[in-house]
Length: 303
Image (cartoon, rainbow, N blue to C red; front, side, top):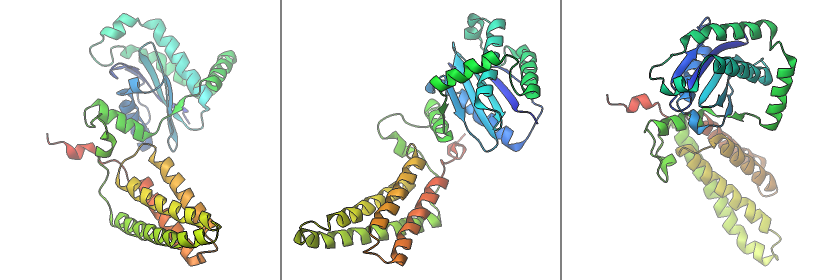
């Protein structure tokens, strides 16, 4: 089984392909990763010098240096240090056989197509031995990754950056709200209705408890806080499902956790069925937020 499946050399400034390895494998996931890799290459200037995009079986890694980015699609079983060691070897080889002036003046893709022969030799070396011949080089790369680890990039960041780069997304204030998501489904409408119901129940109980909390010298004030906290979380879950937001999966997970904690605190004021209902609604909302994707831009084109 090949550990390194594809290598790509591009100009950072505009994503112009300079060289690429010849295809020998045509799995569905590899084709998807190659498409994503080309999408990333168009927005490299917006990302750090080292990056990783994780997939189910295949990962994308890249290193940018002196205006050129070296990118690869590897099997997930290949240690990350060896993947970046391959990229460093690729960088050294390409730097040795090219010059910065030719790269800067390149006006057509794959100007260094003959570099494919070198790429194939490096791929064969890594795929046969599982890594470089020089262990010293591998140790150096491992130490460098400990000091400066690659940024793990989410595909949503790539899609958003690519949309901005191509003028599909307005960069002005509030532009994130203008990004189109897939249409709201029937399950999404149900989730919104249930979330509104939960929010209403939380705010009603919270307001009702306020007068008793003051009469009892604030002994029940934390119950009020828990009800109001759950109310805020329900409202935020509705907003997160309806509108695009950066790091939405992290935010959705945090909101779900907050709802669970608030309801656990209210165990004495709610029966098990009520607690299960509130947690189930929060879980449904979180799942739908995770699975609602950006709308395909091709449907917006009127060409």
